Image (cartoon, rainbow, N blue to C red; front, side):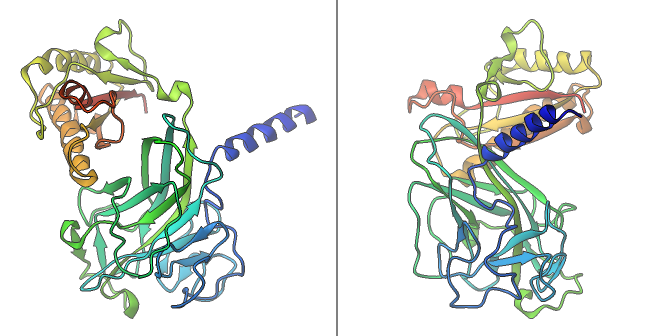
Length: 364
């Protein structure tokens, strides 16, 4: 390969990396190689670029360590990093305790009003946790937070990722947390943790586990890795009306503008069936295609409620396809709640438009 080509490739890689506004996204950097869990009363600035916004004490793990903070073996379990050699760890929930831990980082630049960003990270339950829970959340804010306690942080998160159940085949492996966010403008901090009150959380006691770590005997402890906030370009933000297209292509997002839901419900309204049948015919004409269905709500209600409602709306469309003869293995459903309105106005007309499902066809 010619030297000039190599330089261009390296420059391209650097540009791609620069798009991520999160410093030290994979927790690869450290002040000192961690030797154990982060002790109570330690400095909030536990890793380069990251702080604890509360008095809780997140942990840092790295392959450089041969003690309780190593990778893959450490005091909380056994896990290779999602990528690289490091990750962080937080208490997401403890039975009969209000103790929680959170992570916070300052972004490289403030988010631009009206621009869309992709927010994501990877998380997994530690092997030695005796409990699992169904959620983790993110807060995007315009100022840093310094909370003078180590209990649940009572603030409305920007997005809460709620899994179908508290315990499944995905428990104990790296799970992908992501959503698209339209910036209000000025946001420069990302915080990660469980912001939900105890009564909203589904929990599962892992009785068959042989783990005997006393600090995790009543806890759900999450490893966190590869955090990113990246701006989306115009092509990624482009959505199209499925019904107006003479030809549809895979890997593009189409708006199902003529599928309507009643307020506070995932029941389909009668005008929806014509476009649902169009979607069904496309799937039948392209038997090798799969489909991703993304549900959306209007602005009413809290984030968790709207996430569940939007997911059920996507599942309703999925069931229609199954009833029409499409194999369930070809259908994937997701919920985004109220995070991606087509019309930001708070009118009933705008809300009806925002209660929708989007579709993306994929070929693998």
